[in-house]
Length: 413
Image 1 (cartoon, rainbow, N blue to C red):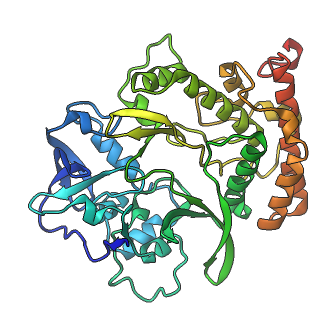
Image 2 (cartoon, one colour; image 1 turned 45 degrees about the vertical axis):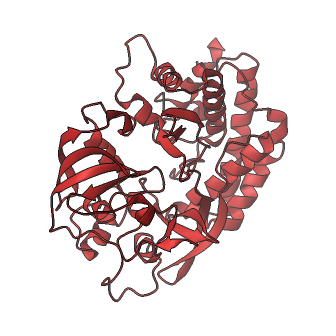
Image 3 (cartoon, helix red, strand yellow; image 1 turned 180 degrees about the vertical axis):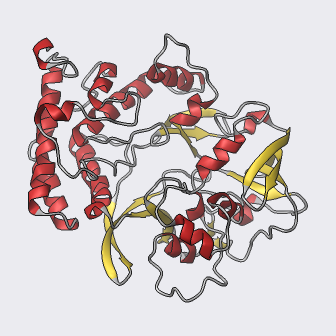
């Protein structure tokens, strides 16, 4: 039976010296600004091999790693939440929770306190949902914040969408919601899952639709299971290349593969995964596959990568934030935040169909259209237009598989 870590909490007036821990291993000592929660500098590194991926042996990079772990300032409403909880920054809020997460096994221990991983970690210890309710605007009683535990994995989840970790039948699940943009981002995650299911791709996070009450109104949300464990961690692609100087004659794409292989990944598996990711993101026009939105499973006992993490986070797709949905040749000129600045240019990296058999996608646009109509508040006309882009993208991929260089002007195909 899981224990509860709710009763444990850090009092910030005790010390500004902290030990970075990897489970119960002392990795480094740091001086922190307890008001802002920022790492001021690293005093000593005890176990360089235990540092988070992307950090140099002397601890350089720890400050950025810590910042990326926290809720970003760009998340809507976070300033009001911090004010209500009497926290200066999202990093100071995370400090109140010892920096614990459900992504990996790192945390920070105040010097002078005797704490243990087994008593604190969120994999084995239950946590309250109340702070997560505040972070998603879904609380029922807004009258007071006194007594709400800040010890929650929800304070160490990045990304702009509002989200919280919940416990359901003993399992850990991530709930994501955004009432704006017709609530489309949540539905996009489910649509992506339907795409992978049709293609027979197994390595993806399965999202289901749920509902959440915000300000007296019911909104759709997505719910997905945790894919790390008490034994395995997630390492983002960004972490893999963060401490690597990419040669001028090597693309970021190839540099990532090179670094991943040096850390134990299988090159054939990495290439197949990345090509599949590029192709399916193209179908769904996922404009936000940056290097923190995919990555690897890491085995900390073997100090090596143990395979690709399942595909996740496809919410920022299908023109969810566009006023006017493009069609035709305009679909080949979409700006993205990924290996390339233009979506079609990423097809340069694809050398095979990577298992994307287009004949398996018959009627998939109609399935996506039905999900958009059922769960979002967009007009039927917009749902039809959105689904039509999927159909057009599939047609463009068919031309690509025939050898057409669709990233060029059509007369050069």
